[in-house]
Image (cartoon, rainbow, N blue to C red; front, side, top):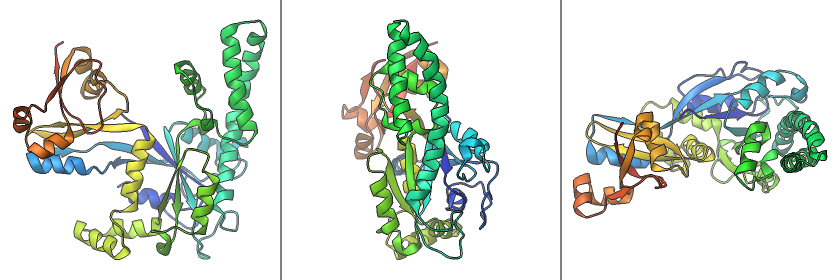
Length: 366
C-alpha cells in the first residue's frame, strides 16, 4: 500500500530540513526561496514499539517495519493558483498526495530570510489556504455549472449532486477549506473523492520552533492553534534544526543522551511520522514467525480478507479464516503456543474487522 504525505509550506520555513531528518533521501537545504524544485520523495519507516517487542520475543531471521512515503514539495507563493512562481508545479505535486503536512515557521531568526519579510505563521497558513481554495473553486465551479442545468430539469439525482456542490462552493467562497464539509453517506464520500480537491485532504500543521520552545511552544504556536481550532486538524511542535542535530548523531545511545539533555522522550520526527500514519487513516497488523516478524499497513475498518489481500491478492480471493492473537495477549504469554494453550487465539471469518495491533495468520485456498 503506497500512500504519500506531502510536506508543504512557504519558502524557507524548514520543509527540506525536516524532510532530511525524516528520510535517508537528502533534499538540498539552503537559505533562499525555491531551493526545492522537483519534489523529493523519501520512504519513511513508521516507528512501532510493538514490532520491536515481538521481535525480542521471537528472534526472527528478519524484521520488516511498515512505511509511508513523504514528499517534499516546492515552496509556494501568492498567486500560485494563477501559475505564479512554481505554482502549477506545486499544485500538481500536492494533488498526487493523500495528506498534507503543512510546515509553519514559528521561530524568529534574522539570519534566515522570510519570503514576506516578517514571521507570521497564521498569515503564512492563510496564503497557502487561499491558493489551494482558489484552485479548488475553479474545479468545483465547473462541475457546479454543469450540474445546475440537469438539476433544473427535475432530475432528483442531479439535484442532490448540485446541492452537494453548492455546499462545497459556498464554503470555499467564504475562505473555508473543503475538508469542513463532512460527507454524510457513501454517495457523498464518492462525490467528494471524485472531485479530488486539494483542500479536502487531511492536514497536520507542524510548527517549526527554536530549541527553547520545543517542549512548551511559544506565542506563534498558540496563534496557530487558535487559528486552526475549527479545522479538526492536528498541531505538532518540532524544532527542525534540533532534529537535524539528532539525525546527525551516529549511535542510538548518543541520540538518547541528546534527547535526555533536552528533556524529550523521543525525537519529534518519530511523533510526526506516527501522526502522519494516523492522518492517512491507517493502522497496523502483524504476522509473526521465526522466519519473519512483519508489520502490514491497512486502512482502519478493513476486514480480514482485505487485510490478507495486502500480503497477496490470492489470500483475499481464497480467504477461509483468520487466526487472530491480540498483541497484549502475545506479550503476556510470550509465544503463540502459550497463547493457544491459554485459549486466547481467536478464529475469525470474512466479516471480522481487523483491529490495530492484531497478530494474524490466514488460511486460504485458491
